[in-house]
Length: 212
Image (cartoon, rainbow, N blue to C red; front, side):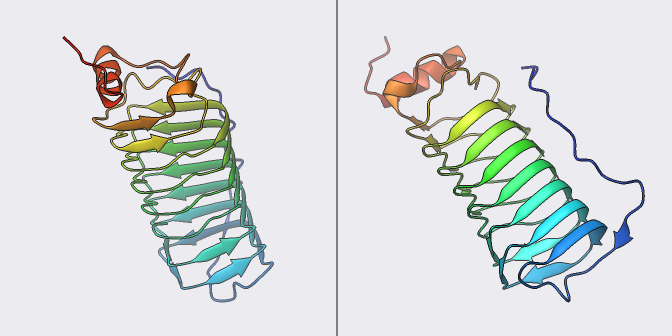
């Protein structure tokens, strides 16, 4: 499937200063810088903003962020697994070859964002607001998208086995070139979505329909 969604790219300056997490605290603001080969562990932070920033091979361990904001940011080769990003804002952000297993993006605002070759198994996007977002070649096994408010969302060649996308309208979503064996949806909100023949049979069987 060729995506038709146009996603605004992060605006990254040609020259970035090197930065680190040693002095990070509540209401910190970072701009025009790069974090590389470093780790942030066991932090609970509020009102932290990153703008025009690149994270390269950075690990976030057991962190909780409140009102976290990323604008024009790139995460490349990072590990963001098992962190809390509740209510975070990601605007013109790219996640490339990044892990966010078990991370919680509940109530997040995610706009003009591209997830490329990422692993987000067991992640949660419940009650998130998602606009102009593409997941491409990603693994989202057992992920949750509950009551998501979305506009222009793509799943391209993704692993979606045991994904739960309940109480979320699916009209306009195309899952036909992704893969799953189990897929949980709200039947009344299924109309207008696109699946391939094998996927349609899988969903029908999950609803108790007998296929001859």
